[in-house]
Length: 464
Image 1 (tube, rainbow, N blue to C red):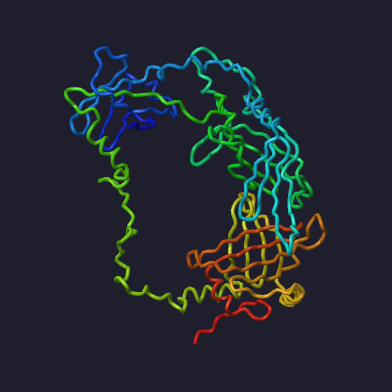
Image 2 (spheres, rainbow, N blue to C red):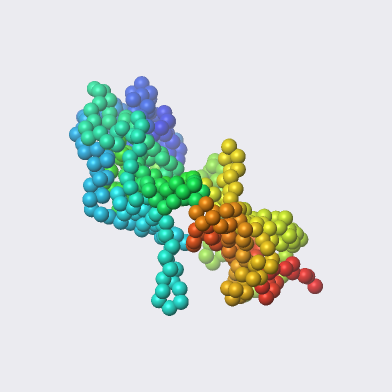
């Protein structure tokens, strides 16, 4: 079995196995970044080793091995000194000609990217019968390319470097993806739907194409980075042919040969491969194995076989009672949301979205509470309280630049038992311009739904 290691230090430790990589022998090797090496154990040392670049190492079990370092990685590869083309831009524009579209489906919104043509978000809702209601926003319909020194490589068809250099030393812009810095090719989709929060400016999306060998030009993620400005990450296999966009690092072999009767594979290394999970909980580490009982076992807090599980307390704790009381009085406001906008909901007071940064706080009031207006709205829309949720109406928010009318929001309070007792989840959707639905899900809402009156209003639960 082969073992992949990433060498970044002078010493490499593998479960008690120490390999001394002498700086006098492999200083160039150690100065390289993100180089992957594959450890092999061929057996006895050949009569005529194929390389003079070797080190002798001794394991914790006093086993001796001679490891041959890869000469080809100590020198720059000649096949990547020059690159004849095509440019990353030409590679991506070839994808445009194929008229490929990809769709990403999320909880409420779906996203469609037709490469080089448009990107949009939409929601389809099936109404009574066969009728379908479509809500959509364009996030960009025209292609532009970013300018600046860091983007020059995107349009270079031929790349030539000086003697002794490597094309891989040229740096394309990078982004953090799953904890790793990866290079990307960027374009900007402009001329999307107008944004009322930016005085009617069109929406736009920065599309980052990432090399992924198994990708299918699909949307990996899409988020709003600022008001009506988005970032989409696309996984594309076509860019993997370009050396400055490649993500995968070439792998080089390190062959270690047994000396003085040592076993072909070190004992400690063999055990590590045979039982890889032991590495996580080996002696001397601070990590502890989980205490979750395995199948057929019970934890120390479990009941005896055949006994009924302990009942859930029917009366909430004093902390929970006070929390519910503060929530219904509007003194305990709920916060949530991810990305540029966060959301704040104060029951019986207001709902708003806000953005906080070093320059201050930007707030947009979505709606304020008026009991009589809610009752009128409730009656007009024939709303009835459900077993799991209830909807309240908040009007008279900030004036919408597009409609010229105040914003308004329907707040849907939903019972969610599969969360921590005081946890809350908040999301916002905009079915129509400046008319919103704010979803609030939390366990504290579950018992409150039992107190809802004929207008869906919640009341404190009186304990007997």
